[in-house]
Length: 320
Image (tube, rainbow, N blue to C red):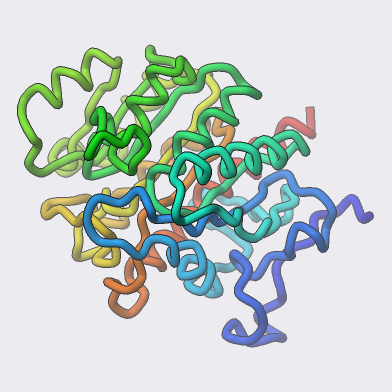
């Protein structure tokens, strides 16, 4: 196999709208054998508490990613030339049994990480963050977490269920797979069930940067604060697309007014490029509620920036 990464289809020769919709028109994992970064979908939304439909999010993001180009000027990098990035397809999970689905995601993530890949996961609802974090922690130990979301997702149960899209990070703290010295929510807003929600969240070790904080302080200052909190710890970034205002991401299951712009989100992510990003996810894209691919375009660009960070770091490590 060639030592040079195999990149995306040349869109100057084959129209972007032609051919299979892998992420960014990259090769499939079975076409390249192994990947430094595996883009994998999890078509699962049985853990949602309001609108369903995120099971179709991964493929919507892939379709929107047809327009991505191989050079990222914001990070001055060609991510698909620096490292082998490939589309690993979807993890087929049971839509009728959440516990089994969680186990399936964890096992599939174990296999991909065990083969040397970092993961760029396309959800699916936020339930999937828990098994992904379990798998990453097996490789790196407890990890730092930046959680971009309108919501805390640290509630205890819904209808007695421990595994839902509103509970993954409480479970992760309870299981000891997060570094509680380096946890932060970013972009939270909207009503809560009570002040106790914030008290419980703080006891778990989370800091909070609200969407209003981002608006008032700006992306650069927020990114600087987050970098200081994370330090050189292995970092997992989990992004619920509802961190964006519904004007920028209408296609999601639990929209909240007053969110971040897509520009703010992308700039904060770019500001984290020096962090040790070991894997990431983008979840909760529900295309049935989208308009003109607004949400899936934002999600595809978000995944592109995260992938660029990982590719740059992989290339730098190989160069040492």
